[in-house]
Amino acid sequence: MSVGITDQTWCEVPWRSVFVTVDGVVRPCCDYCMRLGQLADQGALAIWESRFERLRQMMNEGHPPPGCGNCCAARVGKVKGLR
Ligand code: SF4
Image (tube, rainbow, N blue to C red; front, top):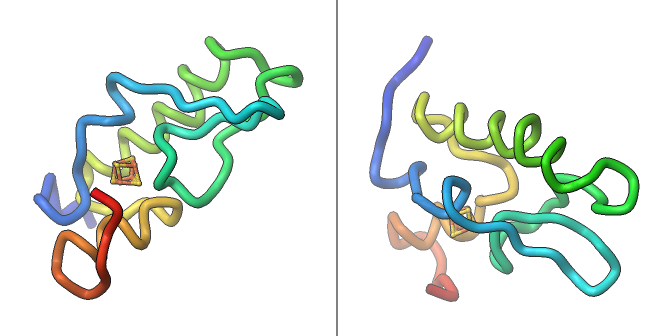
């Protein structure tokens, strides 16, 4: 069941940002604690259109993405966030 967009689970970063580590791991930002892809294996456009799209979909449906755990928890005051 979809719960819709919430302030605790939605952020604009996956619509405007790609963070790539020196070894090619792709994430939406430095706070995201999982990898969305490996640049050399999949390519930026494929990752953007698949894994990022899934992340954006989760946020639009109000589901907290697993890689955003600490950041989302910080928004509701459960932990101290980096932002
Ligand atoms: S970790 Fe935080 S800043 Fe990064 S995409 Fe998730 S909610 Fe946005």
